[in-house]
Amino acid sequence: MQMKTVLITDGGGRGAVLVEKYGQSKHVGKVLVVPGNDLMQINTKKQVLTYPNLKTTSVKEILEICKKEKVDLVDVSQDNAVEVGLVDELNKIGIPAVGPTKLAGQIEWDKAWAREFMQKYNIPSPKYYIFNSEKKGLEFIKKNSGKSWFVKAAGLAEGKGVIPGKNDKESIAAIKQMNKFGSSGETFLLEEWLIGEEFSAFALCDGENFIYAGSAQDHKRVNDGDLGPNTGGMGCVSNPLIITKSIKYQVLSIMQKAINGLKKEERKYKGVLYLGGIVVKDKVYVIEFNARWGDPEAEVIMPSIKNDLYEIDQAIIQGRIKDLKFKIDKKVRVVVAACAKGYPVDYSKVKGKKITGIEKAQRLGVKVYGAGIKKKGKDWVVNGGRVFYVMAEGKDVIKAREKAYKVMSLISIEGDNLHYRNDIGWRDLERFEK
Image (cartoon, rainbow, N blue to C red):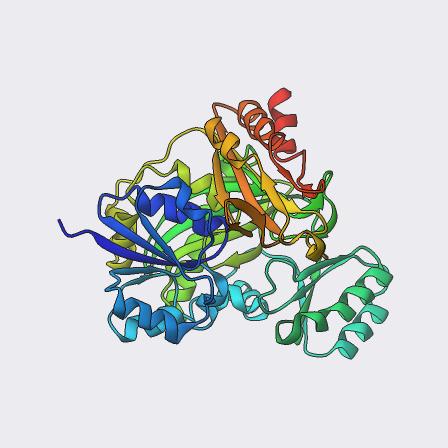
């Protein structure tokens, strides 16, 4: 059997777990990652090549790599790569790609379009208002005083484009911050503030049908107790206990509506569909759809999948996902993001600082997935805000958390510059202890 070459577009923890998963495939011999990171190699013995000087949006260069390296499959797993239409360009030159086209991916990269799509196809979501100027948004707040809103950039903003406004003053300040997101914040939304419990759910879609791949509960705020600014995600647990049979039934129904709607709009969706939901009095509302695996959700869901990932991709591309005998295990997984102190605001003083304890962590039977990290000589050093992730598994949330936090205590960043949340999985812990 001729071994295949796979290219992944990602640089963080999601990319690292995809490297591990493709490394386990009997079909795959070599993995290329744009841009990748230096720690990605540790979870596989197969050859891994990274391209640190490229971006996931470097379409021309990625196409050249595909031709030169005779790439058999591209996993377009990052939002900006979807938005620039990398899948479309790969399809034009006959290179198989797993991930949505630019038009299908609009469900993520244009939050205003996505809300109107949800309304059209009767997908339960918060009330929303769309604005194209700061002035109109501020006038709306004055006319509708005394309410709480989520102010949301319509474009991609690395998971940081949602700012809560509990009162008029906070909402006005949030609207004024939209310009810091550049073109992504030129159009923005004010969304009804729903009070409930959030979760993420994932589907593997082939344009017609889908397989439910699992769920997770992320912790977005930077500090314990869900305090501080929003981040790309500080850690999560799978599969969270909030997903009862009734909730799962609603999620499956919503996913089917979304896939049917996209097909009707002539935007057949092929790839991973991410539903970011909130449960309010036992009813599911969609906060957002994303057009790829979540990060850090991928780090807890991907390891539970027992199927060969290359074979899953073929089923997606060829439109036969319903024929796949999909298998996942029953373990509980907890992942904790190890961050540079100052993230997500300013961590510039921590860049280049030495990291110790990673090798020790690996010996304790947990997975370490690299993100904002690089090798400098013999040392690991900080190269981003979310530096790496520690993922532990167990028969329940208590066991998984214990293992993850035991390992985190062994790792440090020079100058006491490691920051992480100590309460990942706290809701499930409370439920479990009841």
